[in-house]
Length: 477
Image 1: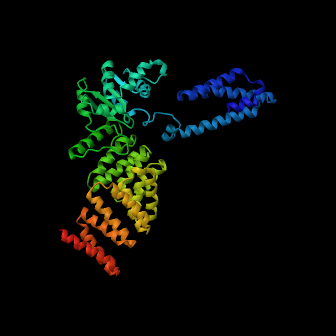
Image 2: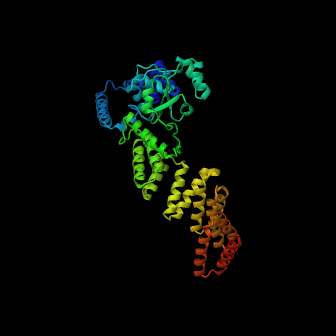
Image 3: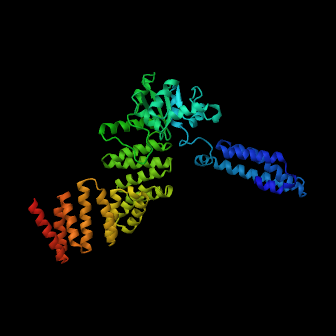
């Protein structure tokens, strides 16, 4: 609009307008904080040049323009007033504070407990922390980089390591740390005997230094599990006692950040609760896992969480709902390979082998050399079901190569034996059946049943090959 107004008013264009417009544009391109400032300068420049152009064409203060502008402004104001009643719309246009972009829950905990001390925080947390808890002096705030010396920034960056943090925290007497969940410092602090995490939200975790006057807070709110991982694979505790402690800790966190067990403002605590419950045995736990993950996706439409929800729905026996969740995960993140894997496995269980092969092919393409055993094995089985024996052989041989225990090797060897028998390559088939028996003795019964089925089909050569193999196995035993 600015360039159009300049083009129309080119005969009486003012140098000041060009300087104001381009200067504000340069600042907006340099730092996102100045985008709003660009509009502040550009709007009057645009209005002045359009007005000057209209006057040059003989439109001296036209009534239709003033009335039209007034009506348009009034309609826009009414529309915005209606839209601003919707909280989701407010967040979409950048009004209000987003819990995924600011440490809302952790700072709320700081303020409510009136915690004092020397805090360490990230650059982009400083402005929010200052505004919401002005009684606390921040480590660094969101002002332009020229406010702080380059050496100060350099020290801050080196504070992410174990040794660097020790020096930084000693120099500044740091007793509290507001850190990002996905940054190295979060894990450095969790692994330190001197620090304890007490609360976290979608973005940040608050750590308190032990023996610094926070004993009561740490005793009531200290977490025994890591808040740091936001990866698709969260390291859940294996022991029952540790799992119970994690569940209690998650409930304390939800209440502390005013999310509660029935809230849906913060996705991350609900995601962890869903993952934890999904690991436990029992129908009730599986149902609760689904509920927690549904709360998580209601708060944050994230592809990883929809993947977790799909797995939970599958474990709860809700296969069609699981497919919908995995599809939603891929709508959000088309390159998330684990959703292709999960969908492919689910369609195989549904006996939709064409879709299973298509999805698993895409998974293996994305995963490349890192494709998992389960994906290769099921691709081989789906290809076998469709009569694509070359595809089955290739996938199953790859699965066999990366199988990491005797049970898996026995399983894949049996499927390879079936593949070679179907293509009348009996000698190779017998070899893999023999490998299956070596890996898992229970395949002796499986092969006996297969022999009976082939007898009914009058495929006597195949029956003879299996019978000979079983006799040899009996001799070995």
